Length: 130
Image (cartoon, rainbow, N blue to C red; front, side, top):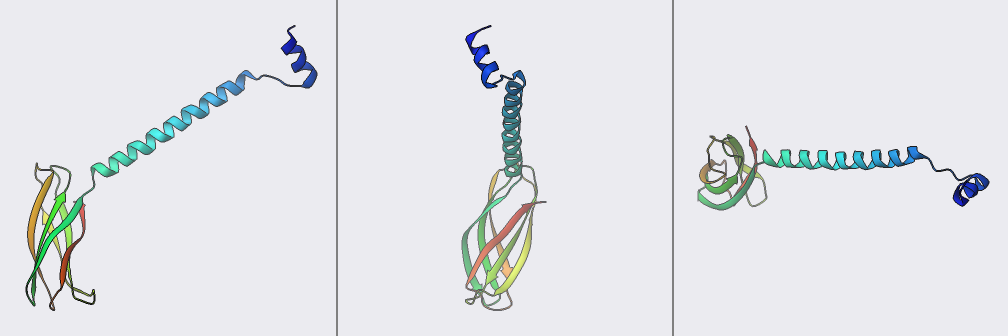
């Protein structure tokens, strides 16, 4: 019997081979959780649409011309909600623009928004893959 074994017997310290397996299982579970989280993050970003307002022009009291660009998955159709607001940030015009699928990843558009009163701004509210 070694000195370490005698000390373990005397003071009750035991080395459990099962503990090593528990630590290994915990490490593997943590790696699996990080991998799953990374994969779901990548999957959700692959199907996302990014839209930026590039310009707006108040044509008259019933029309705003909006310029915007989108970055979307190639080959997928997209819909965007575009909006015009007055000086009190009230919505005076709104419409959904359907954008057909394209092999291009980034595209630019100009769309007219009909308004019920004179607008002071126009912008892209949101876009999504359809």
